[in-house]
Length: 103
Image (cartoon, rainbow, N blue to C red):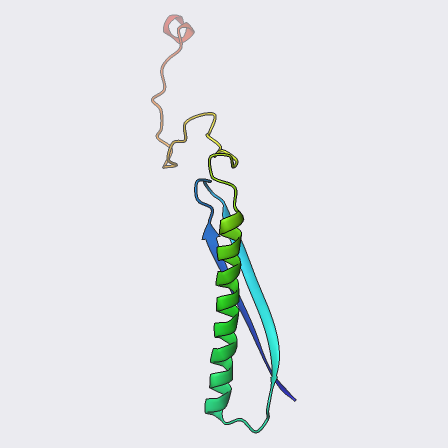
């Protein structure tokens, strides 16, 4: 018995929500005849992959129809303090303290 296994998944961003995505996937294993030629095996692989991609796309389409509008979805989080780009540390000049002036 010869089998072919295939997985297909798709990840798309959630519109209106920052740093969020949805992923839907499908997996299938089918038995194939051992008398198939290499071209026949390639054709079966193509059919299986096409079937899985159509199924996943249909799930996304159905899920997007039932989705709550972005205005009522969770709001994106804003940072409490401004984010500065990371870079090399800049040395600060040392200043003498007030007491050092009278020592």
